[in-house]
Image (cartoon, rainbow over all chains, first blue to last red; front, side, top):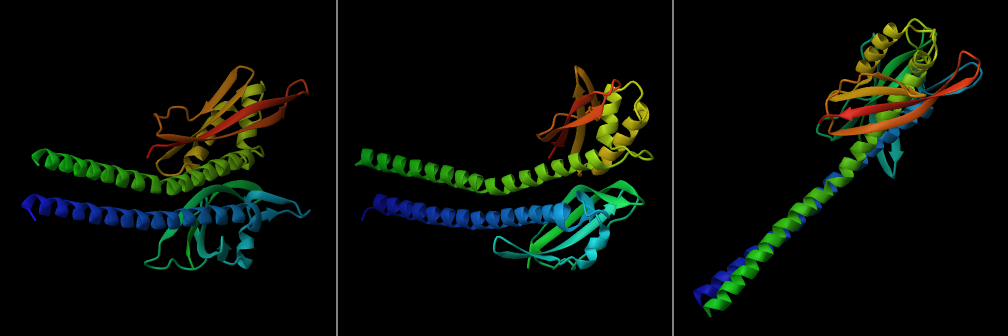
Amino acid sequence: MTLTQILKMLVACILVITFVLVTASAYRQHRTISALAELTDATSAIVTQLAVDELAHVDETGNKYSYVLDPNMLENLTFRREIGGENFEFQISLGYQVSENNIFGPALPENRTNCSLVVACLLWLNDRFQLAKLGVIAWHA
Amino acid sequence: MNQMGVADILAMAFMFALLILGAVLMHTYSLRPLRAATDRQLELKCEHIYKALETAWVEPYTISFLRAAAENLVLEHPTVPGQYLRSAMENALGYLSPQDYEISATLTHDGGTLIFNENIGPPSKQFVRSGAVTITGAGGENVVVQVVVRLFSFS
């Protein structure tokens, strides 16, 4: 075997190893990104469920007001959801223009990836529709 | 023999270049689902901002921000005075705006335009929610005012 042949073989081996490493790295990144996208979409789904249905204000005649939240509904709320076959837990923060944010639900776990989403909403307070913000931080249960 | 060696080296260099290009493309492509999910969240935020402005009342009146703005555009004597509305609306938009984002609201009717928070620099991305507000005109007729709420991203 000449020196040239040995060098060519070496370069070919490096090429194959690089290809395997790059493919493995891309696959690992794809899985991480997919998990993050899934968590992001789950957080959006939880916010929508809360704002449109579960925390929505219901008046005396039984009419439900989507996007208008009733803080009293938080008493019976469970802070766990199954979305797309996966279980998620979440924490809620609720605040309006002249108040500090109030936190509801379990404490954030350490060393666990989470996703937070804060959206505009309304509160029915003192017989008025008040601007407020609903925040949700979700993580895999 | 020398010519063969050069051809092999060129082929290998080409394969390396192809490998690096493929790796860059794979990594770039794999970020797309996360970007799409983030964009969906921003669209959701924009929807919530529109609904909040459509429903929340201007203090101390009992009329929503968008309805008050539509009245200012159409009626000679609106419920909420123009200057007061502008200040209240800009406060509301400032409160609702996420960090590193800006919100603007534009109402148009019959050639007239009313814009809130218009002095915004060129954004990197924008999310739009359009709708309409119907109010009763001075002559008792229904007037439809087009509303566009934009969420601008600068990140």
